[in-house]
Amino acid sequence: MVEAPDHDLVFVFDVAGVLVEWNIEALYGPLCERSGRDLEQIADHVLGPLTQAEISKGAPIMPLLERLGHRYPEWKDEISAYWTRWDEMLVGVISGSIAIVEELEERGHRLYVLGNWGREEFERARPRMPFLELFNDVLLSGDCGLLKPDSEIFALAEQQFALVPGKTVFIDDREENVLAAINRGWNGIVFEDPRQLYLTLMDHGML
Image (cartoon, rainbow, N blue to C red; front, side, top):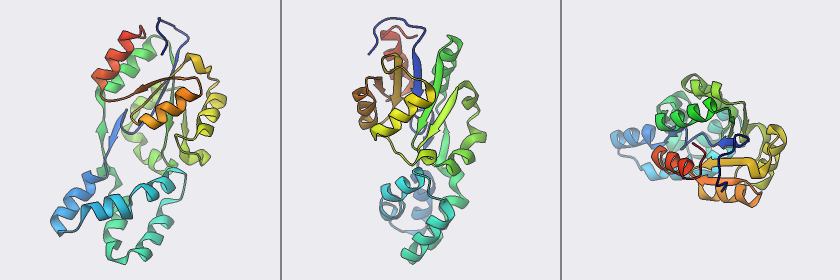
């Protein structure tokens, strides 16, 4: 981690879990509670990591959900709700994080987004993310078919954003993603909450 104030530092932020809260259980918890069905089965298996990875790598959502509906006909209504009621899973903006982004922007730092998001979901969420105007550019896994922590997506970010690894600070809520960035020579912070992030940046002279 850079230990001194440096106005040439560039900050790269993850989205979900850092700037906004997205939680599949916000939709499926109440649905399964009313129906008496198994939340773990739908949230962790049917629409779990494998499905989320396909969406994040750019798979068109409606055809994917249609295929899942044929594979799991007993969950057809819940699978359909994923897109018809997607907005309920976007719980809200993490306001403390946005305040930090605003302060970094005011200090003249370049700011970028590097997210494991499909473009369809990102565009659906965009109206609820006005803070994106503070960022210089966005790189999504859905646009390049690469997922963090794959080293190639960090290499692509370096090229697209004109990053100098030692002058780049990456903030993500997943440790494996941060470690992948550090392995490329970036500085990394595992996000826990806005207060922890603010104090970490303060401790290293970045705020």
